[in-house]
Image 1 (cartoon, rainbow, N blue to C red):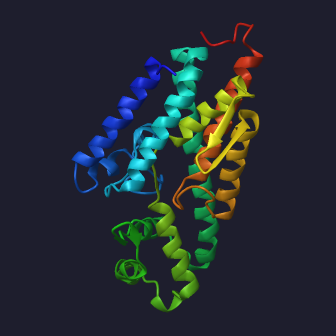
Image 2: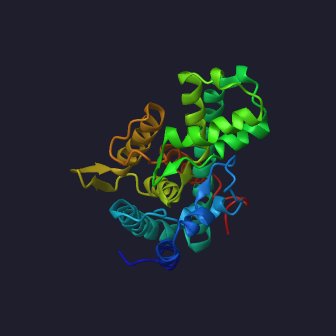
Image 3: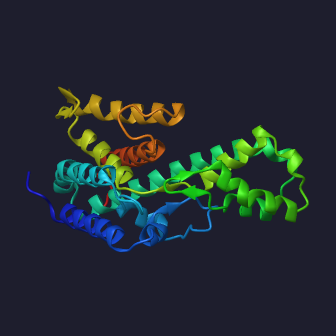
Length: 278
C-alpha cells in the first residue's frame, strides 16, 4: 500500500524524536518529553502531547527499537488506509485525540492506584509537602527502583518532620515504595494513537482479514481488533501481560481504542448533517 502524506510525516517525526533520545545523553531528552505522572516534579504540560512521539528511554535497547519499528509498521499499515478514506484533517484529528484519550485513561488509572495505596499510610497523617518529597526521592539504580536507596532518602525526611521511624513497618514501607514507583512512572510511544487508528480501520473495514505474527491465522478485523483491546484490558486489570512487555501501558491502549471508536461512531452517525468534519 502506498504511504500517505500525513502518515509519512508522522513516521518522520517519530524517528527524529528517537534519534533525539539517542543523541542527547543522561536521559535529558526523555525527562523533557516523556509523559510523567502529574505528581512527579518532572511533569510538564507539553508532555501530554510529546510522549506520543517518543520511543525508548535514557537507555536505548533492542526493546526500544522494536517498539518504534512495530508502531511505525502499524501506523503505515492501518494509518494509510484510514487517511485515504478520512482525509488528512480528520486523520490527524483522530490520531491526536486517540493519544489524548490514551494518556487520560492511563493517568486516571495511576491516580486510582496511587490513592488506593495511600490508604495504607493514611493513619500517619503525612501532609502533602512531606508526601511530595517522599515520592520525589530518586531511588533509581538504572531502570530499577531499590528499597535501600529509598531508605537513604526516606528516614532523614521523616526525622526532619518529626515522624518516628518506628512507625515504618514492612507494610508501610512497601506502601511508600509503591507510591514512589507510581509517582515516577513514565509513558512513551504512539501505541495509544495507533490503537485509535486501528479502531477506525476496523469500523471502516470490518471484514478485512488480519494476522498476528505469533498466530498466523486470518481473523476478520471486527473480531481481531476488539480481541486485542480485550487482551489489553485484562492485562491492565490483572497486571499480567499476555503478548507485550511487562511495562506496557495497557490502559493507554484501551483509552486510545475507545476514543477512536467513539469518534468514528459519531462521524458515521452524523456524516450527512451539519456536524460532520470538514
